Image (cartoon, rainbow, N blue to C red; front, side, top):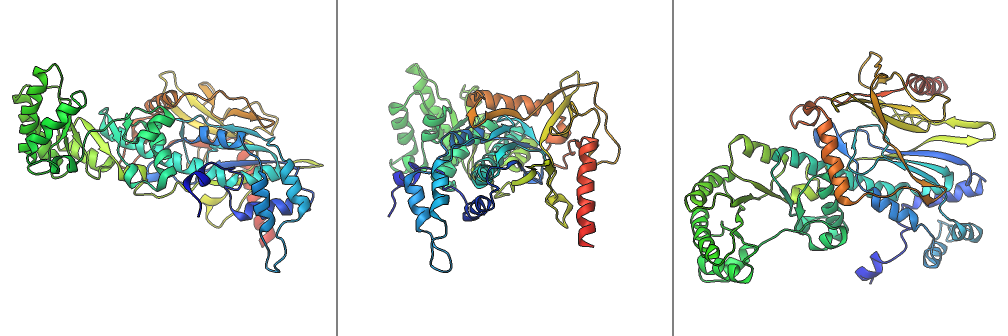
Length: 488
């Protein structure tokens, strides 16, 4: 049976669905493997009933692409696969082709921490059709999850209104990798720290934590337990006070805190993990203030999310630090982002041909071309809207746009703008200097400040304007009409 070290210290070229490899084999047999193609990674609906998402996962995607090789073990495994006739699924010549592959695509992507909206490409891959196809599953696996969790963290932090949010979710996360990448994405989304020590080591995230109920239950009295913890870690005293009687626990913490003060140390605060957090936090604040601990934090936890935090805020809760676990790292109320990776252009001897994926459900119709996203910004720094345009056309960029959800043409040409997809790989070589995780977190904060609060609010958020450059809109409509005529 495989050990964990066997699973995670291996080539990731087979981190894919089998149909990616069967399609690759088909492209190779049809002499199409080296044809130039463009794919886009997008999502169709905003997560958590919101109107924005936070792009995340690019650093891990870059790492995977830099190391993209089929190892001898990979090829040996592929050679063992059989079809329905008990014959090898893949021919030896194709496996030799895979052995020689070296990643040579161009990749453009939105930097981590960028606010992104439905139907906009987070990643664009241009290059040989076979290579670009093989990237689909791995890119979706990485970008979908981390974008989902970064977005959830951003929403939680918005609800906390500037109070620190601590990510406490490792014990409930979806496996080892789910726990690690969730901690990373939550930090980029705005969380101040994590309880996940390995994530702290690997990703340079601040770590926070104190003790659990079992610590108190290991002693005869709560006061004895607090004293013992203070003796062991006088510089890390946030006492969990709800094991027996919450307010009595706060009083016991205050007594031990005064002894800490005599020794030159400071009680940092108390943590509430059950009960009516609004009422208990108010009572705890009174006890702490009366004892002279005006700066002591009240940490609130217990199955929190953005909605419960917003509700507690409205009730006047005196919680000053929020510990959020399960509902953050699991994307609790939406288990997946639902991102897709679609072919949008293919080149043959006659030149580039736009490609479109059709559906009876309009929301699932893809946008053709080689897309770029241009974001227009007002003089006060507020984002006005985005226009997608096709870089394969002769134009220099959009001056007007046809909004996806509005009827009137939008003309933002007089405003400043930023093109959001930046070069990451050219010809398979990395050309993008990855920012630090702290810079990506800061970008998230800045991006959210640039959005009107009506877009980021939890209840009934207003859609952000996303438009297509007119000629791109016309191309898309023409392809839809042409396909409908074929079906008629």
